[in-house]
Length: 279
Image (cartoon, rainbow, N blue to C red; front, side):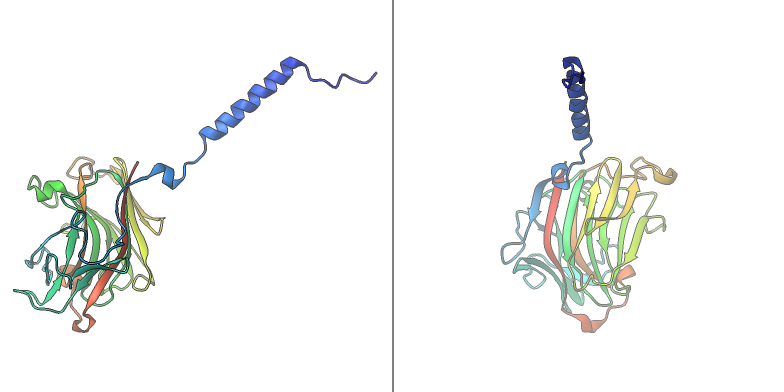
């Protein structure tokens, strides 16, 4: 006689439960997409014209060298030095005398507009070319502005720095009381890129209470982990557990910028967008 082709009901229930558990396990191990992990909380897409949006940007003003013997004077609300046009923010340095400086430029910040403690910051930028240029995308804490801490105890996060005397070398750095450029102990990394003057690149950080990851065009560029390699993880060695604000500026000359080629002006850094995300 042929065998019974029907599966016993108990065996059917067993296979159904096993299948259900496998599907549940698979769902629990699914990787979330970037958009599911990070939620946009602030941005400037520069889809307007004129001066940078004053509800989003503040200025720092002055020509005192900024601790680095820089040669520019940063002006406030100067349409020659910072303006939005055709979807881009232009941060422009000019060969123009102002007070005790031979050059003018702009330094935009989000201080008193938005501060961040942990999150993801993205800046899509095209960099200026020429000896003497020193564009930067970086962050300082509110505690410095409010005179509760001095530099470098307060900390500093350099998302992107470039000096024109070393064309294409992109630097990222972290500074603290124990680990900073004055002592030559800063946490830093740099690599050379061929097209930073002609192409927009996305410079970003992903910042948590455990680490800061630096990314260029969504690819990991460098990562620093709290307490890594025996480093001190208190405020003296890891001052990155407090609110910071973002800075965009174009410096000229100075200790690192070096000799200035007078033929490069006007010269500018262009920004396509700035976006801040949090989990």
